[in-house]
Length: 258
Image 1 (cartoon, helix red, strand yellow):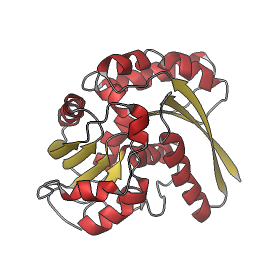
Image 2 (cartoon, rainbow, N blue to C red; image 1 turned 90 degrees about the horizontal axis):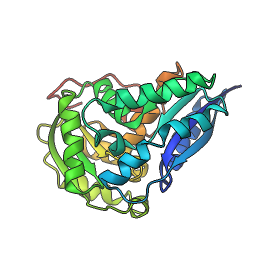
Image 3 (tube, one colour; image 1 turned 30 degrees about the vertical axis):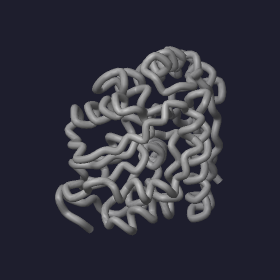
Image 4 (cartoon, rainbow, N blue to C red; image 1 turned 180 degrees about the vertical axis):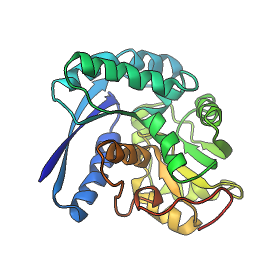
C-alpha cells in the first residue's frame, strides 16, 4: 500500500474542492487498491467572489503553504481558479513558484498545482484548442477567465455566467442543473466543454452524463486539478466516471468529434 499526502490551499468558504477531489481519488482507489490518498487543507480567508477579496486571499497563500509544509505533503494544490486568473495572464506560474519557494524553505519540497494552471494543462491534454465555459462568476470575472485562456492560446467560443457572488451560495448550486445550462451554449465549434470553471461550483455528478450526451470531452477545474495531481505524483491519470480527461482516452484533434 502506497500512501499519498495531498495538501490543499482553499478559500475559507470553499466546501466543494475538499469533496470532489477526495471523491475522485476514492473512486480511483476502488480500481487501484494498492494506493491510498489522504488530504490536508489550509484555508485562506474569502467569502465574496470580488476582485478585492480574491487579491487579499492570494496574499495569504504563503502563510497557508508554510502550515501545509508541516504535514510534509507529497503534492500541494492551490484551489481557487479565479483568484489566480483575476490577477492577469500567466499568474498561475507566479503563484505556483511562490508556494514552491515556501515549501522548500520549510524543508518540504513538493510539486505545486494551481487549479488555474491545471485547467490549461487539462485542455491541452485533451488536444482541444476551442472551448465553451460555464462559470458561477459575475460577468467581469468570467471575462477575466476568458482573457486568461485566450492569452494561453485557447479560444473561448461561448460562455455562460451564473452571476453568483457569494461563495457559499456557489457551493449550494445544484450540479444537475449544469446539464440544462450546457444545452444553452453554442458548441458548434467547441473541442471541449469546461462544465465548471470554478472548483467551488459542484459539477462532478454531471461530468460524465453531459459528456455522454454531447459527444465531446467535458472537464472542470476540479477534474483538471485531479489530472495534474495524479501526473504530478507520477501516476496514470485515470479515475472512473469522471470524463475523458481522466479515462485514459487518446486526445481529440481540433474540430473533430469522437
